[in-house]
Length: 126
Image (cartoon, rainbow, N blue to C red; front, side, top):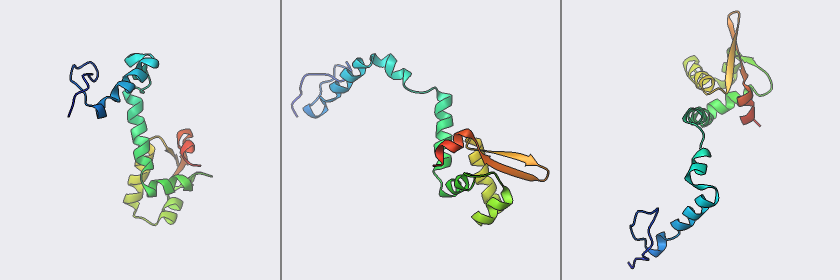
């Protein structure tokens, strides 16, 4: 393959014509203010971790079902379980994933735990 003589990202390695379009990406980065501006567009690692947990929690149909059950009102675990018809341990696992992701919260009322959506959780249930 014939080399175009241009390099990618200043490495000095020649590019073929198919890869020459990467220079367009470099121009685009410069238009927005360079690599520093691009790096400011990426959230901090703690926020990325929180986002990852939320998206993981949202990736399971059972957990999405729980979120939709809680959409209109808080519910105790026994009502959620009556609808879900899964084992207690499985429900507990899914509730824990949702709580750790910040999508739901549980409030103890006597012997009962009442689950509800957090403000963050409400954003994901349309």
